[in-house]
Amino acid sequence: MKKDFAIITCVRNESYFLPIWLAYYSKYFTNEDIYVIDNNSTDGSTDNLSCNVIDFHTDYFTDTPLLTKKVNELHTELLEDYEFVIYTDIDEMIVPKDGSTLGEFLQRALESDRRFYTCTGYNIYHVVDEEPDLDLDKPILRQRKYMFKDVGYDKTLISRVQTNWGLGFHDANNFDGIETGKPNHDDGIYLIHLHYFDFKIHHSKKMSFAGSKIHPHQGHISWQNKIFDEEELTRHFYGRLTDKSLLEEIPELIRDKF
Image (cartoon, helix red, strand yellow):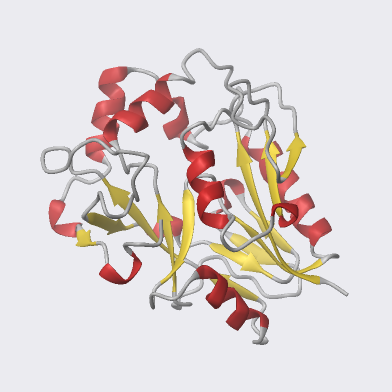
């Protein structure tokens, strides 16, 4: 008999995001149902974890095609043992829009005949001239006021059928004959992206990768992970949102989720 749910993520020296990710998802998944693909971490962030840690070696800091292939293979393998298998990047939180918990949403999914669910993507954005630096010892969403819509993060991440994600997991097609791409419908779940949730953390994380060996064939893939110049990082951070009128207040219904 299959178990209900498993969840997968990938990490490489994620001392900021891995504790946040685990704190959130471990409320809804047991350690034995959490799978962390560790791509050559050297900062100790994956040492002595209680969940499943899968060592995965790449020769380059950024090798998106190889990591995507690994996730697709693991997802397919886990579907033999689980009804649903979920993937998220380490800075992504799946949060129901109606204020219910992720556990409650997943239970409803289990009782339905739906094969997969697509998230509605939003970035949490640090408005530096209005908000202080983030205190990681306090709930995150209570320290930030704004988010903005990002269709690039409308991702199909919860699936009970074999799924072939493209690079960056922004698009997918399911091998049961249904191509999902980016379905034009609302499944009632946010994908909250934390990449821009704090200016200082954003810079510190990016600069820690300076000097890393980048795959020569990456091209435009994960281009934002190849910015190591302080001034360019600042321009990128502020340039991510050039129109403040696009900011929406974080709904009160979800402010206590993490």
